[in-house]
Length: 300
Image (cartoon, rainbow, N blue to C red; front, top):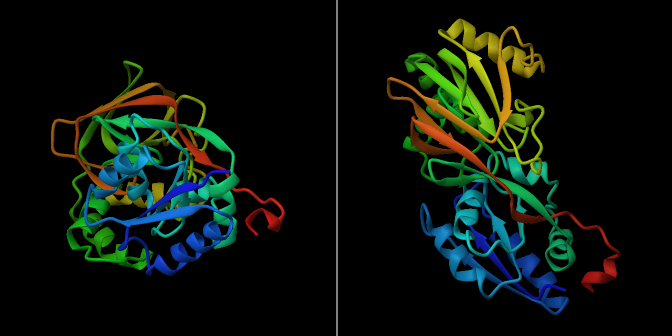
C-alpha cells in the first residue's frame, strides 16, 4: 500500500473550491494508515516547483486542477516519474475524463493507495511537456483571449466573449506542417495535435489517438474565412470532420508547424507562445493510476 501521498492543489482551477473534497480524501487515506500532504499553488509554474520538491518523499501525487496544472506537475517530475492521479476540477479535465478518474473521495483514496500504474506517453512542444492536446491557430487565439481576462474560477460560459472576439479578429494565417520531416500541408488553416482523442466539450477530434501508442496525432483544418470555420465546427460536432476531402489527418513521432506571421499556440488549454513549434513524443514517460473499485474494506 502506498502510504506517503501528496496533493498539489490549484485553488483557482475550475468552478468552485475543491479544498473540502481534498480534505475528505486526506481523511479517508488517514483512516487507512496513510498520510496526504496537501500543498496549494501560488501562481503560474508553482505546480512544477512543488512536484519537484515532493517527488523524492512521496509514493504518488494527486493533482487537483485542470489540464494545465497536470502539465505543470509533469514538467516537475522529469527525473522521478512517480504515479499520479487527477481529481476533476478544471473547466475541461480532458485527461481525467480520458483516464476515467474518480471524483468521489472514497474511490479516489482507494485509487491513490492501491491503484495500478499505467504508462502514458508525453509530448514535448518547444521543450515543454504536455499530455493532452495543443493547437496552432484559431483555438489557440481563443485560449489567448481567455488568458487576458481570467481572474479566478471559470466555466464554459466564460469562454463566450473570448471566442466571439477571436471569431471577428482572427486573420487565418498560412501554416506549413511537416510530419516526420515530410511536408503534409501548406496554406491557410489551423491545426490540433496531441496524445489523446478527447477535446473540448467531449469532441474527439484526434479520433485515432491512443495515449500509449508512441505516436503523435495531428488534424489540420484548411480554413481561410469565418464561413469555412463555421463549416468545420459543424462537422466536428456531427463527428464528420474525418472526411479526407476537408481535413488532413496524420500520425508520427515528430511534427513541426511554422508560419511566416505571428500565430499563437495553446498547450493543454493554456497559452503556449507562438509558432514555430517542434513537437516530439516520449513513449511511456509518465505513469497514471487507473480507477480502482476494490471492496470497501480496503479503506476501512
